[in-house]
Length: 197
Image (cartoon, rainbow, N blue to C red; front, side):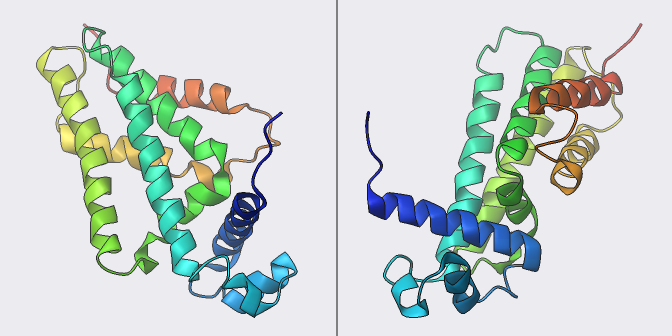
């Protein structure tokens, strides 16, 4: 059975703890000293593992961005599938990323503002690209008569805003599994877009 290198394991523990603190207190209000205390470390020894708390924020924000893009790519890989099917799969993929680690998702959605340049601009460019991917898919559905909406851009923003509210109320020990939530949200959000004769 493979073992995890102690250094990697420690860094993962630091990331998890910091992410929980960022979510609870906000990035700006979380100090390296508080993080060290939470981990049971001296502040000086924490710096032997990470350079700054922004390093962790960068990993969380860009790591989740990669997951969102990978999920969307997998959902839309079969270009011959109906647009409604691809959009359903993209919604479900988005929900799965959000529910995999709700603390990281909340940090991704709200704390990115504390990224320094040029990372902040790079992050916003990724966010815009992701919104454009949804908008383009919806636009294709409108053009093919599968979907109905007065404005593809507004529909995409409304859809993503609805999905991104999830970390505010999702609880891993709640009544619904991530897959059940993904299915229900896809049903509800697609219901307003599907074209009915």
